[in-house]
Amino acid sequence: MGDIRIGKVSAVHYEEGTIDMVFEDEEDTVRQGIPLFSEEYKMPEVGDLMAVIIQSNSGRSEQGYAIGRPYHAENKPEKEGKKNLYFKRFSDDAYVHYDPDTGVLEIAAPKVVIGTLTGYVKE
Image (cartoon, rainbow, N blue to C red; front, side):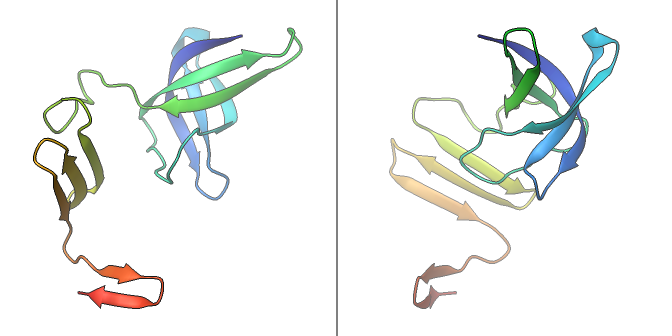
């Protein structure tokens, strides 16, 4: 079994897909090399709050797995919340938004390129 903990990201290891985290309730203990559970590559930033599952192996050692950024007063959803809505921000000026009620997929970026495996279709 594991405990779910909230900590702050203290370092990001981009190539390994891991982070180091500080847990204030453990006298600012730093746990290193925590892998992220993810379906996509989107690394957090230093200072972000992250939820982590800490799994104990019969008291011998502990392994953590970062499972995501919880919503809180400083990290609120950007779009209206509703069932099946999808919103993904990539940067200040790039995002994808899909509303199943209207069937509209919105892609916003300074430049959008639609392509196939054999080449570009439209720019």
